Image (cartoon, rainbow, N blue to C red; front, top):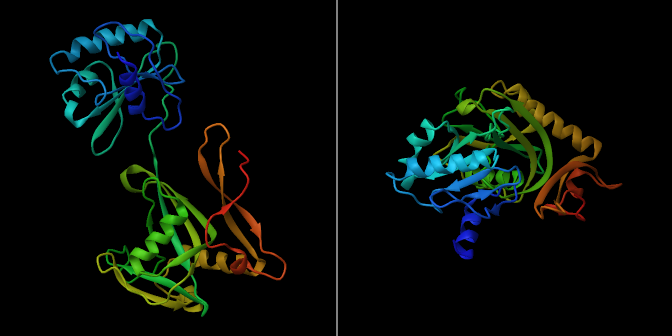
Length: 304
């Protein structure tokens, strides 16, 4: 196998955290794959092709080789073009781990003297809510077309998209639902629950955003009503959930104390991976949470 081919195979692995390296050698008629730091192997069907007729034989030879080499977790990333592999993998003890639109990931734990040490796939859905309060002490509220309680008022928000920061998600959701431009001020609260969609847990992060515009243009596809509502009215409105009232009370208490939960961007010194770190900050003397909060994520020296 050429060096370029080996490089392509390594690049095809899901290097989300593990460090992958090309397998040094493998017998003729077996899958090569890439090795992770846990002594596992990942085979990507887009990188190593095999005809449906040959697949059972190649798989058996590969499993024999991996068992002899005392490998642990064996992963097959099977794309749509190789979907015929799936029944044979299942017949050889592979289980489904996760799937996306274009592939399914299966795994088999080879050691017989220890329990499977396979991390679960994503089990929590992450959403954001935006508490947008203007200089007139009015909060931006929406009533959804498909609300559980018809006519109820809530904060703008929605699910975080893949590779999207919490802050960016909140700003985006407000813009999509109301056309109001905003900037980050502070994280307010985190709500954690279980039994959400697809059997997942649910993480809901509420943050205060400062409005940069005032004229509302609602998204007709999602939103039935949208308005600036006096905070006092919101706190006493019969169609506002108590949890949402508590978010506003927490926001007001932070302002009273001159506190905020700020965001800094840092980088891991080994992984060279950027992180957003959220921590409590105190407003400067003579200032408040509004004046202290920056419009963008604050940068700080790399500490991790």
